[in-house]
Image 1 (cartoon, rainbow, N blue to C red):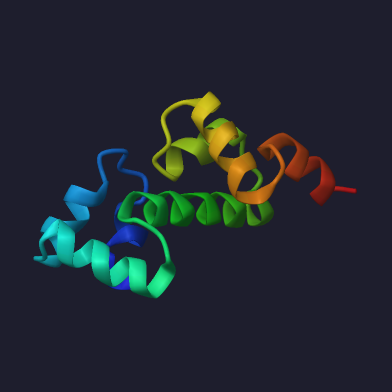
Image 2 (image 1 turned 90 degrees about the vertical axis):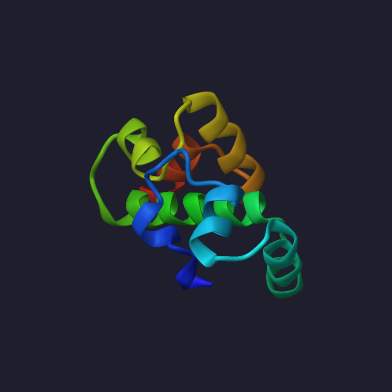
Length: 102
C-alpha cells in the first residue's frame, strides 16, 4: 500500500480518495474493494489512519509543536486532529505527549 503515494503527499490536505484513485490509475470502486479486503478500512479511513500514525511518529521522534505536526500530516484544524487522534489512539495528542514524557 506504500505505493499509494501517501508518504510523499501526506502533508497535502487535498490528498483524499479521489486523488489516490487518480494516482493509482484505478476506479474508486476497485481501489475501495482492494483496500477494504486488505485493511478493513475505506480509502478515507485508511488515509486518515496513515496521517495519524505519521503524527505519532513525529511526536515521538521530533521536538516540534503539535500544530506543526498537524500541518505536516495534512490535517488543517486542531479540533479535527484532536478528535481523530483520540478516536484512533484513545487519548488526545496532548495526553499522549504527557504520557510519553512520564
